[in-house]
Length: 165
Image (cartoon, rainbow, N blue to C red; front, side, top):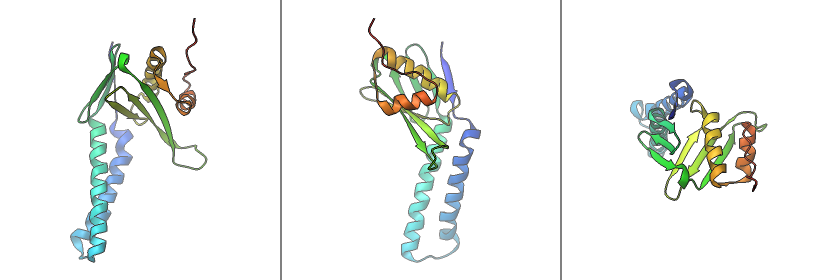
């Protein structure tokens, strides 16, 4: 049975708004005034960065994460697939936006010998994806570092090493 997940427009609306505001404040002065050359280059570089950020957000919105018995696929503009039997490592990172670590986001990174799939917590069903991937990683003996184990624990996922029977 295949399970499918995606990034909703609602979860990405802040990224779209941020890139729009950044583009407006960087391209706007270039379009309506004649800034000094150095300021113009800085504004052009900022506009390029916000354009890349916008493109990354569009790619995320067009990406679907699919899990089944065989593996995981990120289908979309920058798609990749990893078979569970080839899974080498699982890493779950937490990025805090405040000093008290109360707010932030997580990124799940799955690797095989050649590819990496990155999924951030804005995707609908992130905890379920992490739970299924962690179960496969544990079953197959994939590398999971201590920080990732602690972050999985934050999601209520037990990732203690498998015991020999």
